[in-house]
Image (tube, rainbow, N blue to C red; front, side):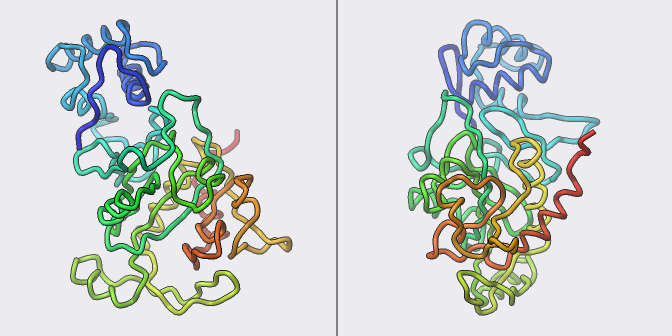
Amino acid sequence: MSHSIIKNGSKGSDVALCQRLLNEKGYITSIDSIFGPATEAKVKEFQGDSSLVVDGIVGQNSWEVLLKITSCGVEKKHIIHNGKLIPIGWDRVVLWHEPGGLAIKPGRYYDNSGKEERKPTMFVNHWDVCLSAESCTNILNDRGVSVHFCLDNDGTIYQVLDTQHGGWHCSRAAGNKKSIGIEISNAYYQKYQKTYVKNGFGERPIQTEGLVHGRKLNPFLWFYPRQIEALKALWTAVSVSYGIPLVYPQNDDGTPCTTTHEGCIKGTFEGFCNHYNFTDRKIDCAGLDMPGLIEEVKVFLPDDD
């Protein structure tokens, strides 16, 4: 999927991303989300130095070179918030505008292009009851809803929507406006185990400790270890760069809340949570060890000093 074409007169988060990338490559220009004469001049300078057509228009070829960020010959991976590159310590990340990327279509989210920078305070985990991230993205688009990330069976993180925009995913408007959402690929029902094996992913673990809304679920398919590791890497990046606290919804006695949570429903909770914390009509992601994963992620955080 190619990135949108921008030129003199364009505005929005794509322009801001272009301006940030130009600055990181040494072509210094203001980052104001407005593609004016100054930005056009820097784009032409960059294009000339990169053996591209010098027309001041950022099309697919210019985007491909701009987005190739390297260090010692190794491509750095990142996610994007309002045009800003956010580093992530995971080697399987595909952005919506990159080759092979997946994207949420316009009209399926709160579009905050050109608006004040959104500051998410929650990260919401979902499982998709699909066989792949691609299938999940197609279904989200068909249903007119959205998340920001899809995590595939092989551990690839697809960013399908800039986190500047508000996704429609957690069943509550207050939560949608304050959160980042991820769909983790998992068909849930054990009848699909043979399909995963046939497709070369191997057998999924079976979750037998899924407790939600006061009841224990029957055993169901669980996440691959590589998906858990990818999720931890994304949590780390989000906590460090977005400032979302590494906490989870708790009951009054300090135990993990495995049902609806008033702070999540009202959009006042700050931290990492699950879809079931917003409505008793959802059970994902029952069985996800929130305290354990939070403690593991803390190990990766930089020291305060």
